[in-house]
Image 1 (cartoon, helix red, strand yellow):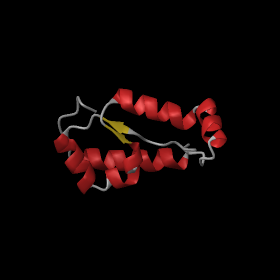
Image 2: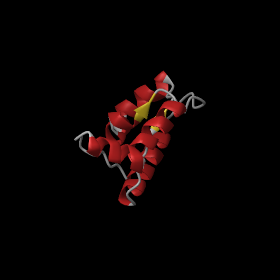
Image 3: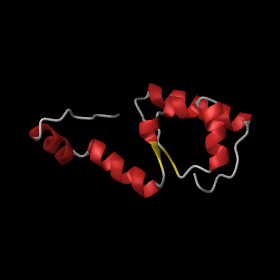
Length: 90
């Protein structure tokens, strides 16, 4: 979202509606590269809390790597082999 310089209340409302709809379908939303002003507004509007800190990333590259690890069958098998709990996010 680095290219988004600002967001207003209608944008917050649209994001909230989209987040609710996608969650109902079992889809997780992740946000990356937030402009500080936009991040502040998303925080004030409750969007960041709804998305969750585990789904906020500094860059899209960081997000892709993290999501691949979350949903990688081989990564899950490695965690199980090490006795770690499997992190499954839908």
